[in-house]
Image (cartoon, rainbow over all chains, first blue to last red; front, side):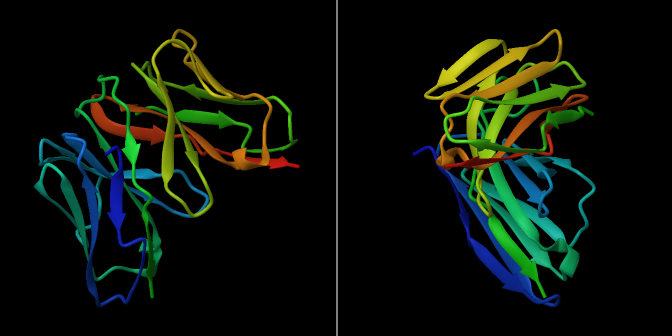
Length: 116
Length: 110
């Protein structure tokens, strides 16, 4: 299994809703990432988990709350989002954390989020 | 933080043409990634390379670490190659994660 699976594929939520995005991989990877991609823009890093611990938070607003319950699962909890948060949210994993490791990155298909 | 530049931003070509997409980056790296994204879709990793050249089917990627430059070539291009091609490099400064180029939107016309 060489896949990163994200659910749901599409999500429409109101500004007062609470929802969660899910990302799963069963490759034994110990680094997992959340990226945000606005239309016609490159992905931007949001969070990095290394060995199930949050290692990087790229100044993301607190209305986005990541969680890594185990080495295979990564969640992104959403609360009180704004319309400008509408974007494609991509999850990725790599075998090992760390910038100097020559490890391949595996990406999920993304969750297309629309905030109304 | 690494800065990643790609060119061209848009490329339209006829089926069968040889395609070249270029990528340059500002901070020395151990490996560079070439990725493919179809409209509205997720990202597929094409190559990760740290030196020389890699080939997979009709795709060839080269990198010159000293010049901080990489190229992606597509031989005998086909309409199904139409996609956004993105190069990405480690963010640098000891940080994990990737910094992405703006992507090259490739359209291959039959």
